[in-house]
Image (spheres, rainbow, N blue to C red):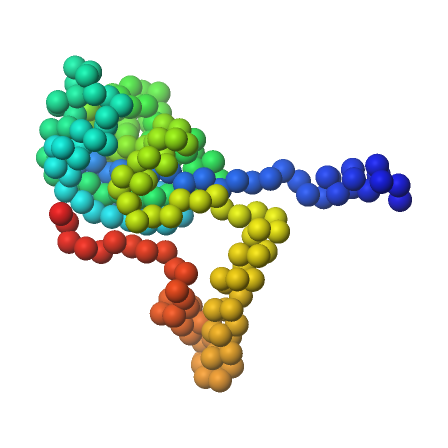
Amino acid sequence: MNVGKQQKLENSMSGPKIYIERTLALIKPDAFHKEEEIEDLILRSGFYIVQKRKINLIPEQCSDFYSDQYGKMFFPTLTAYMSSGPVVAFMLSRHNAISYWKELIGPSNSLKAKETHPYSLRALYGTDDLRNAVHGSNCFISAEREIRFMFPEAIIEPVPIGQAAKDYLNLFVNPILLSGLTELCKEKPADPYIWLADWLFKYNSNGPYVDRRPLE
């Protein structure tokens, strides 16, 4: 096979590259009581919850978070509203997470969302332009800034693909999985699937972190 044909074959086999993104999602104070329903819709929509945090923001924190809106007429009302009760922050991950999350939450005005996107989260749980239930990052730069704001200890890095993914698996995943399978063979439990899942949950040092501290 000549070089040209071989290259075409390799290209056809490789297929399109899929890039995993991360984005920030907030359940705002007016929809805090609907946390479980909204989280269920998030998971059913193909998102993975990397981190989750519940927090009471003070007005100064709200001003910093919405610094790009500073100077607008609604800014004082916005910061007062966002500091009026607890919020739930999620770091979400999936293919094209930013655009898919924006599509799921719908237009910023809940009244408009009810007309044009009746199954969006803002249509289902929002009240008006201000009390619109949820927040989503507008773009990659905003997502990175907002994730760092809500999860200051988070490590934001590109999700590896190709050889980098293989190297990651060899370095972090395979050793812990091999240890789990070795213990599984020693224990010989009645239900090996549940046993291994419980073992990984207990001993996997690479698992996601969920902030379970009390509300601030």
